[in-house]
Length: 370
Ligand code: PLP
Image (spheres, rainbow, N blue to C red):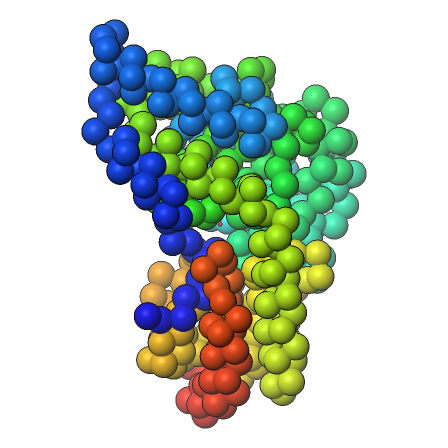
């Protein structure tokens, strides 16, 4: 079994989620007006109620969709359809948000890019909403793990719709949609041990995103299409477990994260990109003079799975837009690798990684930068 250090990309499906998924795999159409339809509907309603309770919203505000990417797209495109005007966004957003904002810019949106500090957080949340008609900000960054000041941003929005991409946050740190006061919030089940291919969009009753998909009217017409009942139920089961374990798990991961960070600091010429106020499972670091691709391949050959965390890589190592937005030089950004720990990570995994890292880094440095 490889040592898996890419939990922020996707985390293994929890056993409880697998059991729940199997139990409902033969559920039929939750919109059917007959016994099997009512049965599927009651499973779907149960999942919706659980997720609403766990994320601090009303069941009607839970919109099931197919991915975090889809939730971000529906929210941003749908809210901008209503508001038009200027979108305020940061350059550290995940491509699901970044590319949607860029596409809207192409369709006439003005975009104000929010400045980001060297610690990977947006600088002035109080000012972020000024002059904006729509604001979007992630709760926690997928590469560095940096937690963003979303509370301050929402508190200062004074009526301007705010979308929060909480894909990395949900199931890992407490998330309360009503307390936050955002208009929409995106989550994705496979990041907290649910099935891949199940997104969750939380959408206030008003203003709700205008539909960008048209069809049968399911999910308040915001995301029409026959529901995947088994995946919704499995996502709810995974979230129940993740939330129940959250405090203890965060403590456990924080200890492992510190152990790994300490060991990395003793390797020379490293730059840590994960700030102190970050998700407990993230360790994002540049080993100067080593190409990230070489590090990933060398680690893979020894049974360690990690990535750059940057979705733009696609087989070609380009500098991460997140790191560039933080003012990190291109060469440093190209030597950045992300280790993300999760609920299956053990102390033995971390110690095994620590044992091989110095040798891997020096071999990657010998290979040089392309
Ligand atoms: N937003 C963030 C912050 C993410 O980390 C990801 C996935 O990595 C997404 C959105 C997209 O989620 P999905 O993979 O479910 O489409």
